[in-house]
Image (cartoon, rainbow, N blue to C red; front, side, top):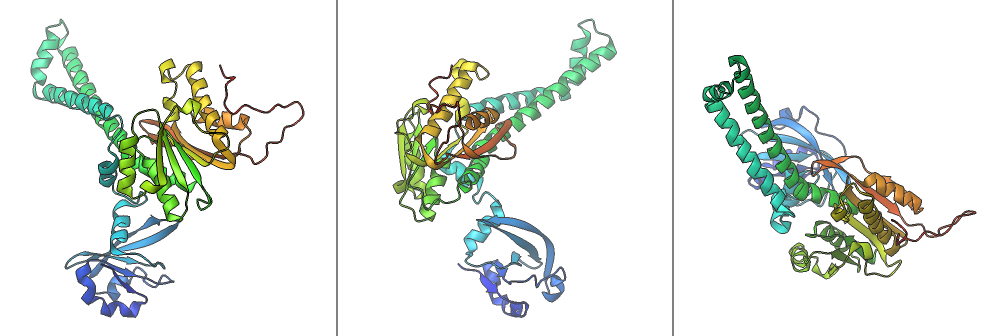
Length: 383
């Protein structure tokens, strides 16, 4: 079903026969429908406006409520090529372009045991806080039996109940943030990472380090498909996720663009200067965790991964990494490796900590100054 498109204000008289579609688009090069439009269209009430990100354009959408029946959307800037389903999806999902339920249905959630752990404890603390509320006087009596004055006993009971309730709220918030970060935010950040590469039409080989369920992997594959490219993207992960990752690629309709491979990110099984683009999402910080997150050995392992990413990149190739906490270390190492166009995004809270996207370009020719030596991309001299 395609929506009816009005190109000027006079055509609104013809829109009544299209009301059954539930959606109309008013298209014009100029803002010809100011706030007084409700008087021009009897039966409609302006309820506000919003900006919607659609591909590379920001469209301003003015919302009008049909007083008798459905919600009707009028677009007051020049657009074309919209179908009903696309515009409805844009209205529902804003920047993400996809509902979180769809993302979860396709990709599920990694490390779901953490979410279950948080939810169980949140429910437990909620139950305790309700008990404190319902049986406050007996609990005060219990504290009083511990040789506390009456006032101190009531304070101790109230304080304990308050801390229990606040703990429950915090645990529910943490569980929600973990779920959002793993599903909706992961999808949004994957789109941002894809947009960090200016020209996908020339990309022949791309690599996703730590592909996991394939959210970023498939986002790259969909971009290659959109550009009509003959390129392919390789997903690498140490875990045996090849079957499930290829299944998600099949659901997304990009299986012909995707290859999966098991391997260690600290020793990528690829030759030097092989990939045009290398990406990685919330993976590098996990490397070396057996040594402890804050140890020098763990930092050395993460830098080794970064060195491998640089090694397999072609000269002029682009690397894009979204990770947690340790991004300043990555930026410092990339500067040491003489990478170009190093850019860091604004802070985004993910998995209850700070995260950033860092992008860079491998120089076509690395010029050495006096007294400088060529750096070893593999970082075998670290630690």
